[in-house]
Length: 403
Image (tube, rainbow, N blue to C red; front, side, top):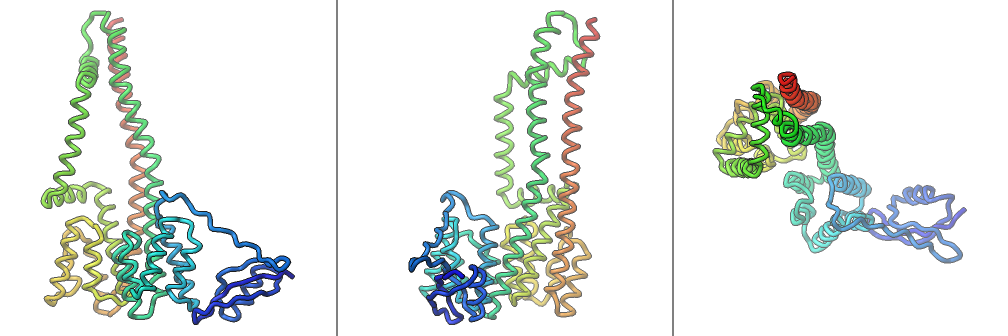
């Protein structure tokens, strides 16, 4: 048997100190849990001395707060709240064990603000980019309804889902991105280095006229070499013009309409918007937030301006007496969505209807991402093959014509 020194806290937030004999640390935790105590510190006592607890090793200060860090923090907070620990003490305990300096500082600020008399949601609102406005609003409602545990769980699950989807998309696009980069480098070398050298060293000294395809390729290569600076300026000017047009409301809507009409990619953008819309509405309605407040949060989520206008005007339409189904009418939304929303409004379980829509559109989005990534690689390889083929045909046709 080993003697352990412990610091524990009961459901009334009172701390208890003492020692206990047990086989291992797990046995100590089980014994203290039988008293409904939460273990804060635990160490081995040797010869009247207490083993110094291990210090939390902090990560470098420049490492940003990730979604995984926030989800982990919310899940720990949910467990502690369920155990009866006060929010202030729970956040303080998480802050002590946190290894990310940036998150640690924000948790310190939250703990201080709560101790100063502010609510949890008010303290979170003052922490820039820690949680979204939607998440803070859900927590604010939970403070009024007493469903903090469920609210923390909903926010964590929603953040985890979108983080996984984003990671999956980035991982799926990595291979096509590498292939595209290599294709650009290889084709640039062929057209702007290999072709001019071959012409200057082999074809030009022969003094014979070139076949049309070869002559066109040589002219194109020479133009690129002689005007590369103008080409680069043109590319950067085009990017700047695109950004400037996108900042004008009419120009932004025009670009968004083109994007939505683009095959496969347009549908993926639409499915992403609908999945976020349905997921946010489901979580907020299930948390006791009104339809108007939920729509207000959806309109501030950073969607395309076309859809932001739909959700913003929907609030006014609902206040004038329209149903939600009628208020969000839009030519880009699929008709099947309106039927499910209407059924939810009629039956009084609108949050369940949005939950079903989120699952459906999320599955559609994942399937479309797979299609895009599976199509992108072959398209890039085919493009590379065409360029290489044109170069070789042009060169060999010239060599054969000179023989």
